Image: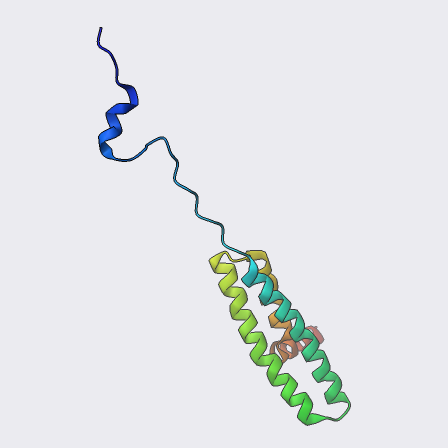
Length: 117
C-alpha cells in the first residue's frame, strides 16, 4: 500500500492553499451622512432667507437663497455619489430628498403643485 503525501502535493505551487484571502473592507457611510447633515443645514439657511425676505432685507435674502441653491446642488450630488457608490446609501437618499426641499426653485415648484390641487 502506497503512502499518501496529502496536502504536500501542492507545496511546489509556492502558496498556502489553506488560507482564505482577506475580505475587502466595507465602504464607509461618512459621505452620505455628511451630505445629509449639510442638506439639513441648508434647510435652516433657506428658512433664514425667507425670514430676511419677509423683513424686507432683499440683499441678504438673495445671497442666502443663492447659497441654498448652490449648496443643495452640491449636497444632492454628494448624496447621489453616496447612493450609487455604496457610501451610506440610506443617508445618500435622505440627502437627495433634503437637498430637493432645500433648493428654493424646486421648493416653489413643489408648493405650486400642491397649491393647484
